[in-house]
Image (cartoon, rainbow over all chains, first blue to last red; front, side, top):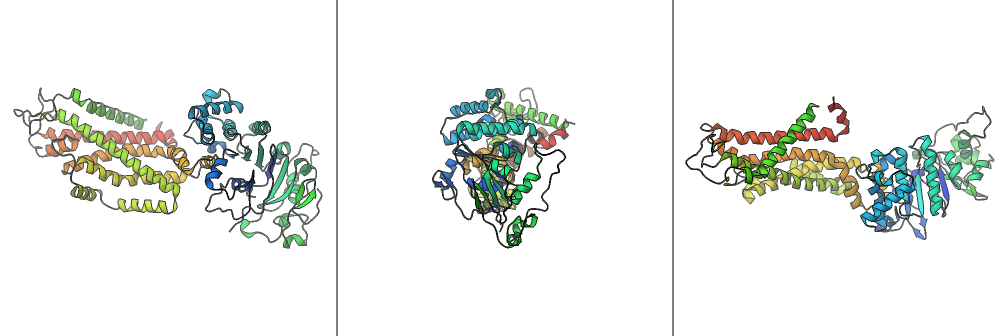
Length: 305
Length: 273
């Protein structure tokens, strides 16, 4: 048995953008899918924990009640817009679907609202484009349509799972700008999942850094960049180019590979790659410990980046 | 390009046969049941363009009316078969587990049973007649569509838009019918055109054996069966219905082939050469 995600815990407040950062396979997406109980079962299983949303535990809600929350009060935006839209239905109809599903709008009513939404994510000529099929849209437009679909029911939470990973760099900023704008306008909370620290710096209020299925550091975005406290966060920051870095400075990669989840080291999962490791790291798993000012770190050593 | 032309030819033939048989009451020179006893087994003449049968009925009129029976039979039995097969295939692929296993094992059992024996057994049990032949086709043919659809569903259900639909709060039933089914239909449409030709052939064969359309009903298979007895006196009597059956089956196959290319984007480039 593999624990893809273990002991991950964080809060999300109204009007706030919280980022979940980490490299591929660290459990970001599984965390996101778990929130709506979308982890495929089998093979996946949620074995414990609680997900509190507005006073209810999503893990114990009956499936029918959960379905009323999915797409209605918690919406999700996926990584690959080209595959996340159904190729056989016109875009407008797809955006209208959650509206008629959750708000009981008539088909006609839902369609006109869908066109309105398409306009709000700045698709030109929304009346015509609403009848287009997904393949007639560019990647950026597809992701805009996905955002329109996600925003349709005015959800309390938007989960954006790497919303810009599959897009051209030039489009990425537009899409994120649009997302942030929609979140602000509607006071929606957003969980932004990404491996891109640049995105995090610009848009997130708070950041959770994940490694090997656990959160290793939590902090306000500004604090994280100024004073990263976990060796992994420090490594991540040093391995990305920054504009304020002195010219000619070298990027420092993190040596080694993330641990095989089938064969986790008994102590800290980052210990084999860690420059600061001490004896205790090999034996005992560090828990998140608060450092004040909303920053917590799961490390035995007091590293000051 | 050649295939596209064949498909067009097939389509035109089907169109021609359909219109001719639909308009049969208006364009047929005689009623299919009127006997002209002075002209029995006459062979082509001014009064009877394609000749008459052994009891003096006009062969052209018989073929036109017979087409209504044969083509309609092909269409209806195919639609019913596909409806049953698609539903079961969709359920098997989407639900998986024990439902999948149960449906597909039954399908396997049908596959290893000879069709003709089943047809004869059904006729023996329920009596001869087109309805019972149609019932046999539905009971046998659904496995073809069920396998086709199940295979597609297994691919489509893993695609991200299915997860997106789930995340949007769609119920499993809705996901199955609205999001997965339409994405599996391309090969089913091709399969249906091919299946129509099979159904027409089975109707002709069953009628030829005497367990299909019962006299005095005209059907292509019926004319072929009656004509066979007079093959030496009036060869056209048997040849013409046979020719019409062949033409219809060929046309549906051409159309099916063409549709397959048109609906399969991977082959689309090759056929345009």
